[in-house]
Length: 295
Length: 305
Image (cartoon, rainbow over all chains, first blue to last red; front, side):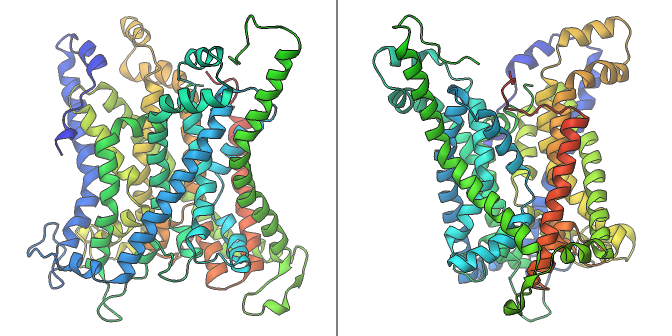
């Protein structure tokens, strides 16, 4: 948690420190506003954490801080295959999709950033179009198609649509990063007799690694987050991911809402996101904004 | 742009050979991605169009036949479609408008803040990264009577059991989740506004508001339009939070929820597919209006940078 506070923006902040002191009030005002923002961002998450530690008896007391603390909710969800299997599915599907998207995306992004070939503009346009495609429009045909070819309710059945929707994101982010790479190095390699292929694998790929890590995080978050495909293209524990599984949690009785279990599961699948955000905050921001404003 | 023009080396044949090799490599590198994208969108969209022209009820699969535009007529004459479309547009417009105002404020605050800039950037990434369904459950339990800490705000009424309050909560959830993304895009745009220009405007006696509307916003226009386009189209396909918050009850269905209900509750693939096609057309129309009407430059394209 210590990394949170240790990242002040050095350059512009230092420049601003030289300002006249009458700006100090405005500055304090902005900082106060920022504190409010921090609170607003965290409260809904803390609320889920609080719910997940409440005992069944106190879960409906409506208080923000648990009166009695318990780990029972966590013990319960980790004792049920409905959740553990879903967690495995979520991790497996998201990791495989991410790996594939980064590999295929890097190849295409390299070509876009670096090579001249007809159809390049069309490809970029296509990627943007797909990125904004309404997923629901694919659900009905895929549902029918997957049942016909036998990959309904399998990992593959989810990996394929995830790959499709994350590839545009990957290509887009990666090509923005690839444009920043010092290409003279590649030329030097080619002058030294390397083929374009060798230049790509030996020289550019290592330089491109930071951009690829960023892209991988963004794609992972996207796959981890999906709900519509997960509930539409799965039907059993075999491939149901956590967001979909949560919706199928059942309480002790038919009428009891399994609030504690849902909250605990929600907290568990938020942990990877928090870890990513804490470790790669700068990268994620760079990735999210890459290319979007350089018009 | 910046294509590797080979200097020096032998001039005629080798250059074109190299150009051809480059072209082949470009296609080869893009091919896998293009194949995946087209196979999973192009073909299914065609299949959706095909299904939408047929009567296809999953309970009576043998009974399917070509019915022309009947399914579209069914949808377009149904008040459910128009209501879902209206709800979707309302949610998209209101939430994006709020996101824009809050996002701009947030971006300005982050741009100006001396302390805690990194902290804020870290913290606001959490709403962005959190699983939508998880956030929606958080909101649902917060507003559920007895359970939630917010439910008492409007007296005893359960907010998620009426259309207006339900939509308000959905908008709130949407705004909370995606304002940070908007803010980051705008912050990146804000970084392009030269400090000198702002100082000059200040010297010339421009008020803070004038500096915002006359200098900052016009300079940020490209960034703003791109951000708005992305957010509007994304808000238009809202599904997850509505599914969790109200499940589309109390007339809070979005078009995506309506499509889902037709497929998996009514099991009507024909009508469901015509809904899919219509939603796609509406999204395409919105994108077209943005690109042609407001001149959003396709980011990442050729003229880029």
